[in-house]
Length: 355
Ligand code: NAD
Ligand code: DAU
Image 1 (tube, rainbow, N blue to C red):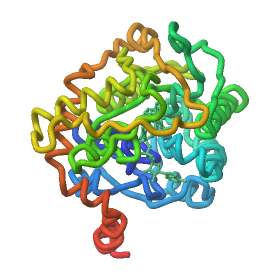
Image 2 (tube, rainbow, N blue to C red):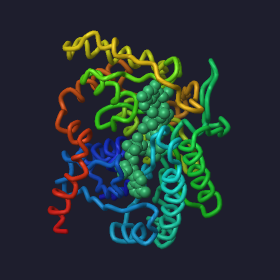
Image 3 (spheres, protein in one colour):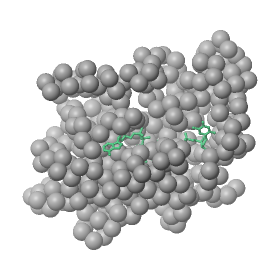
Image 4 (spheres, rainbow, N blue to C red):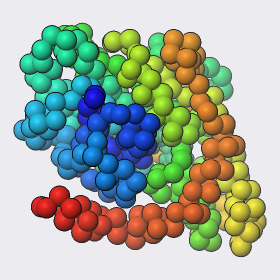
């Protein structure tokens, strides 16, 4: 049985990856997460009793603890998702982004290198370090063109600069020390369990509650959307079949303006939650994000051609599933919006582990 160590497994994308590994494979998963405001063990309630799932509340910046977890659990691969992930927070307070995304990645790389060097030859040869990153490292596109794996890095926000730094560290650890790494750069994810500071869950929940739907600037910035479970499937494929030292861009060929996204959510809600319709009357134009990147669009042909990956959801099917999920999962939503999810961890998790 393979053991996969996943950092950031209590976050939005990490929890989708953990659920897939537990539900669709026989792998053991070690979830290493500090549980910042973005980490939520309620997102893992459906798998947390599985004997193949282990949780370690550890900060990736803590070298001794990361080394202990590697030693104790002896993983065959590391998938690194832990990060500070919200662009607006990086603008108002970049320090945590530098610490976790850069220092944390460095600390994890060094601890993993030491662990990997000590493995026997077959396990060392089979080991993988998979770094999960973002298309924001490439900067901003004009009206045409796509981000390919060869696009030069031009990060514009403190968040994207910190992720670009982490990508460079991972690349250097491969070239200098021969660490067996693969890196993926993905476009905007959406789907269940998404923290409602990000556009799509924020708009769904505000609309249901009759609150303003804030649109930065004119709403004509473009993002390229991918359903989170499609991203998780792509990550598992790259881990299994990706070529060492290579980068794979992941995206769904789903470019939309922010206004189109918000209008689509409102139209679905008008049908599924007619109280308050038309919901688009709540749209409110607000001050633009400083340095707001104009357009992101991923050329995902390399992963399609080399690894035979394609997304299962269209934006229409994925967005409808997402809205339905937020309407049905009021317990999860209440936990997050009330802050209860953090107390839930103290009450339930500490007791269960006997701590
Ligand atoms: P998220 O903010 O939902 O989750 C991040 C997780 O990391 C949380 O569980 C948090 O507790 C944990 N974490 C933060 N700091 C930590 C630390 N110091 N030590 C251990 N754990 C820590 O983020 P997400 O949206 O799930 O993104 C996951 C990864 O994917 C990130 O690396 C992000 O850059 C990348 N990514 C995200 C998107 C997207 O659209 N959300 C797209 C492309 C790439
Ligand atoms: O492209 C991948 C990136 O996508 C990831 O690396 C990031 O971790 C993830 O947060 C996401 O970044 P964005 O900044 O694109 O996502 P966000 O949901 O914050 O914003 C999406 C777009 O919507 C962006 O153009 C800003 C706009 N926006 C956002 C919010 C929160 C609004 O107009 N109003 C809002 O209230």
